[in-house]
Length: 344
Length: 278
Image 1 (tube, chains in turn green, orange):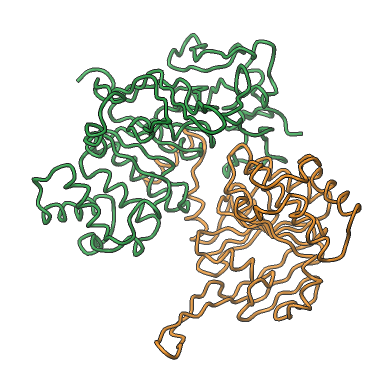
Image 2 (image 1 turned 180 degrees about the vertical axis):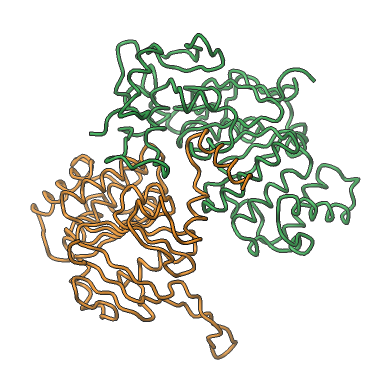
């Protein structure tokens, strides 16, 4: 099969609310190739989760307006019926969520819920075989003593084990794409490291393409191949992992990188910060959405810049900022680090 | 090193596990805090790190006497406060305040900001009437909010602003000790740095002493002078913040630090190669 595995084009998602229409996602394009990890980075309200949920049709409702196209292996998903989508979910695209505490039904055993998921897509598998398969999957994601633990209830699993079980359930039907929405945010760092290792293992051993949604650039640095940075419903920058970390073009990306605390470097006297707060989607500023928080704002920022390649040598590295690459390189260096502005 | 504002010695908090139908029998204990000792000097910050369930929050609550410690001693300005009764504790509450993790759950949704911040000034009979209002406005201004916010309700604010309200409330009585229990973990990344810097500034201005609890070791190291690492109710390592992060001695601390993602792709690739090679 040629062409990308998943192709998202001009995706826009709006919600009708009491206070007017909220454009949660405003023009997102990306391609995901087999075996790739794509990270979508952003803060609350940036549209990262809505993008992911819309891909598998979870945002459908009479109050939702979806425009643009989502193609899986060349097949359009946005126009499919709910029944057709049901078949895509799980068997082709699996999704895991932030909170492993609430993702399982507490009154059924883990195994029973996995059997249900397996048999929902293929009735020809009998219960016994499905149960055996559930145990194998739990074993594959590193649950010790999986044969016995498969009959445990969710409360008998720790947070990390539940997230593993969620991943196992996601893998049950051998999907080609895994969407992980903040999969480690609720977990301790040591458990987070294990889950990230697991995602990476699966990515390498099974060629599982992964969309990782997170706000944590540390997590991104550990696992991603390519990165989308979202702000106010738009992609403000996208590029390879190294593009984003070593040659970031958008001031918002500088701010995010600058405000990270690093254990491997001496601590700065003050943490560089981004002033202000993320915008309300009901009341987005005109022009560049980051304009009110950006210390480098100038006249041209009243117009929304397109997502364009502005660096001659890397056409895949695109951003939405009117500054020239030379200006950017000069402005983002603060005391030898990448940052947005010197702390007051 | 200046004198210790807070001295905690062998602090223990056990929760009984009860069983039995008619007569409750204690079958075992959850040893949430199992004999910890630390000192915090005036004007300094002690960072408390550890994973969930390590006893960080229970330790904070036992220090503030919000939970009655099972045993051990907590000295505030040289005076024993463990085991004091409600009435004896009331004047001490002015000196010791707390900032909570969840800015959505820790503010009463039915009260206006002015009440949230000002109520304790009233309760402790520090100010009333016009003076109360002036003081509350001053506090809001100090934490980076506008005095016009005084009549608004918590739901009208973003997470970062709510945390600022929580900070204003904690500082209203001009306490000496502020215990911050995960004050930034519920906030967006771009807001976390603002709050950390605000806490830093307030410490300088008001000479505050902090106990700063968080699971994000990077943030803790940034704000702390000393760090204590907790695991299973015990402190496994204490020391100078940079020292603990750069040259950890305890095995558990090493494991914890090794799991923190490095936000630098080259570094994290290098580290991964080192671990697979080793």
